[in-house]
Length: 125
Image: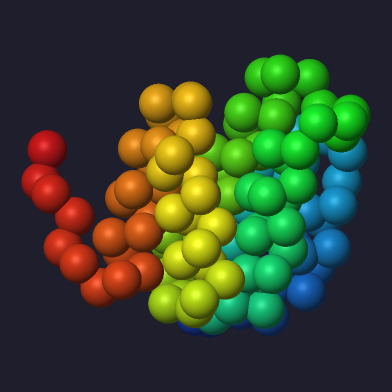
């Protein structure tokens, strides 16, 4: 199974394996799983709680992420949540919190994801 290249609802059978991969300590493996889940879209909704936890947990101190890894983890989480597009109160709360982060790239990714989950049309750039 080439999970990172899988797109759409037909790839939903890969969600449990990809969700389990979100606990991998290697940020490259984790980012690939998050990207694949985002590509699957709404069919990956079972992974949403784990993505929210990663987005929230990596902002807390004491985790064993290098600064770059922490940043990449949070960006991948926000992007995947937007691509999955589930309008849920926990998703909205996590994205709104990330919109207030000091990292401008995370703010932008979270703002775009929030627009998508709220059903707003993202601005064309």
